Length: 373
Length: 167
Image 1 (tube, chains in turn cyan, green):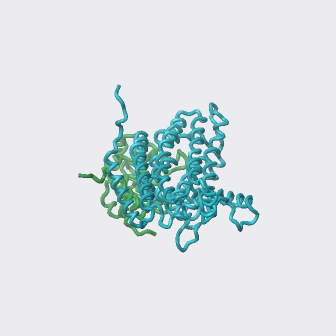
Image 2 (cartoon, each protein chain N blue to C red):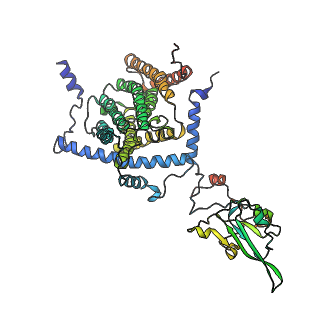
Image 3 (cartoon, each protein chain N blue to C red):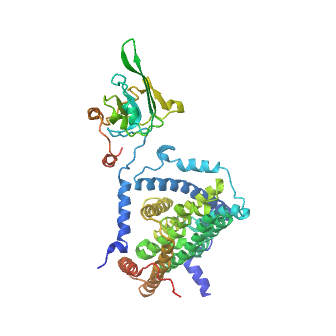
């Protein structure tokens, strides 16, 4: 009975269908599937343009400005070019795996967006285990990348894919641990409820969690400075060296769609999702996604690529212990002072973040892992 | 003492630099539409030759490390004069070293000021006689000739593009 009461009184949105939706579940499904696909594709086009222009300007160049007004159609032109290209499969390739890899890599990104709310209740499926779903699905892309690396039968592809797997396995841990802080504060795993719980954005209450999540997220989607898997100065193009034509386009799409998905999740978990004054919620959501993406581009153009041992050391010796400490600190705060004034907690949490980052930078050392026999 | 550069301040400084660059005018020129003035003493493409000043002494041909200059002279018995019959330069061989200009005792050869002298046919690269004279499309560079350099426009530097107002 108690469980039932809990479910009734807390009115957790267990069902995805809004009550006033005409036609029931399948119309809802169709509508949001189309919206998600259109959203991802148009955002990818826009985001490629934004990234190339910003990279250009930050490197004292102009970026693409020839195709269409202000070069806006550059991504379209690139897409057309790459789609018309010949599809070459290496003769030694594992054809099925080689063919399947781009699909396996791209599908999870679309699936991932299903639980991200565009405004209150406007999402494909309001899962009550949304965060778990996100964590589980976001790792599947790695399988696609590894399939690509393995199926190409090329040493550079395989090296790139191995690096990806190593990076993702390591960075998954601080990523998940830093999400748990947010879950503790919100008291729910549903992304919609997490957004509703953010009267002040969790980036202020969880600055360290945001920092860890952003870093680990950048590593997870293999964006620079953690883009070891496609380190073009070492590995040609990493896992997609042997891809051409539409399959290459698919991987290109995955790269940016992943960035958008990660930006959307960061927005939802830390920046208050669709909440904001004046503007309509979906616009706030897109605006925040673009802002997060801007920070990704900014760090990309500023920081040089890390070495593989630095990558591993950062994950295991820096992010992982900090994520654990952050988890405990948040748990204590939530248990001990559940009714504390949020602004006092903001100040305390920022202080804790500063002290921890400084202290751990002092402890941080490369190497020291080798055992002499 | 803590060196904050090692604790994230370095990254913050780097981010500040890139952000400043974002707001600054980019140091590029969009070439076919916008052009920069080249150096007034540029050793540009294509030698310019003056028929009036040339005496056919062939000092330039001897100075040329590539052997790109071919000069044929003959005595004109009617006018009782020594004159140049052919002055031919294979500009494809020319390495723009400027030695011929420095060697010429009569200031009859000049480096070109232009740099967009690409040809569609390989034969066009070999130029002789009237093709080598100064013209609107083949201006003379001020290399080794300070008097010519003074009249040419000042070179634009990329540093000026940064401070230039955004259009």
